[in-house]
Length: 136
Ligand SMILES: [Zn+2]
Image 1 (cartoon, rainbow, N blue to C red):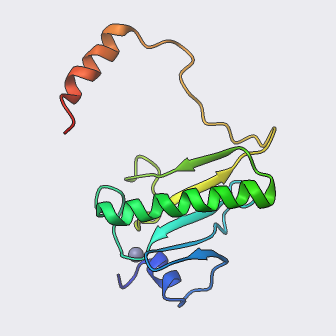
Image 2 (image 1 turned 90 degrees about the horizontal axis):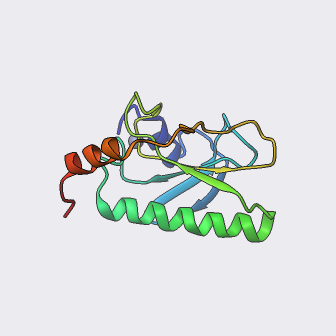
Image 3 (image 1 turned 180 degrees about the vertical axis):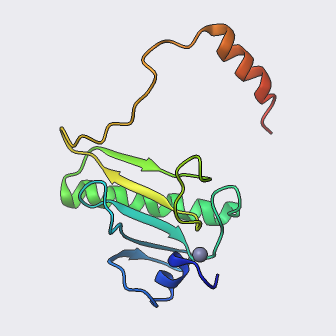
């Protein structure tokens, strides 16, 4: 896509620190890294986010994520990693080209994602479950 930052990176119109590439995906170091070796994996076909991306592109991205994680574990000794994929502005998506973050985690890195510590009442979970209906 014309004015997409990540499409420009794929076309090498903008330089990047590539860590992996195949026919379907491109992976590079995040220049605004949350932690050391923070990596982005993107499909080469432009899609806005995971809602918009086709199944094959998402499948190829996840395969690459897995391959890169294994490589980081084996070669860098990184055993703790978060995978983050944001879809939409409220979900903190910043670049509107599908991307998955591989965020290695280190002891006391101060990047903890907060979860609600209180147990959600069963009635509330049941209401959510019934609203979801059946996924086919
Ligand atoms: Zn793009």
